[in-house]
Length: 159
Length: 159
Figure 1 (cartoon, rainbow over the protein chains, first blue to last red):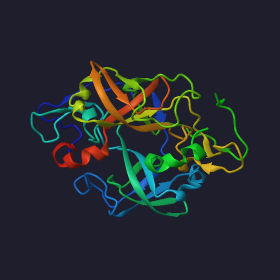
Figure 2 (cartoon, chains in turn yellow, green; figure 1 turned 90 degrees about the horizontal axis):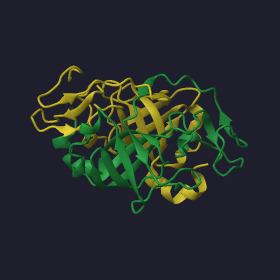
Figure 3 (cartoon, rainbow over the protein chains, first blue to last red; figure 1 turned 90 degrees about the vertical axis):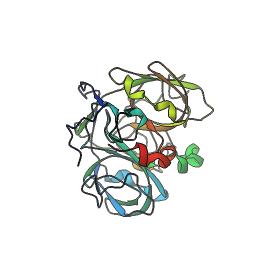
Figure 4 (tube, helix red, strand yellow; figure 1 turned 60 degrees about the vertical axis):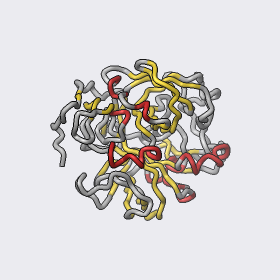
């Protein structure tokens, strides 16, 4: 496991500004088979294991109609990440890249996004395939995948 | 413009819990041609107008290498949205849908995500096509699109 204090050669951390511009409420918890970064896949696969999105109250009624979609976009909070790196060295050499040119979990706002396949619903829990995050990752949002959504947008989207 | 206090027939708002589970720092500001929801498109188009992602310090160096990608994922904060709706009525009738089955801007954590086409970089500003958000929308994150990223993941991703 990478220590959160580790800085590799060529990496650059900034003084992290206070993260008070907006506040998140965790709407659920993600259960996956992976309890350390060494085990977790780099990117989820749609034939990967079933993972569980456990929705908290008062948000459970917001699941109504979600079974209409086979592809969902999941947004989650990578709670173990450091947030102050602007240059990173993925291969641990001098060739650094900017954080915005990587999908690394270390970023100013450590939000992960995945497109997953809906497997089923059990009460307050959504079963999906395609995630790569650690067990107990906080869930931030869940919505139909934009690709699948497009043809229906005129009928269903927006206000 | 829809008033933020408006509730349509069949819609359901909950007591919004305090949004203190995690804090965001705005890393930039999005400039688009649209200043009201009536003007903004429902979904961005890759042949739409060029929009500007103005990156704030200290995050500008995090752009290094971003010109390698033609498709980027943009995450932004829909700052005008109400957050307490769990059932919504997009067509303003009794047929409500759960918030998680919509891409409506009204959601517990009003995060928008778009896949955009990179047009160019000018100093601290990234020019892109494909957005649909209002002018002055706060920018939360910017990363290579997962689709384009896949073949290189083994070389470039991770921490």
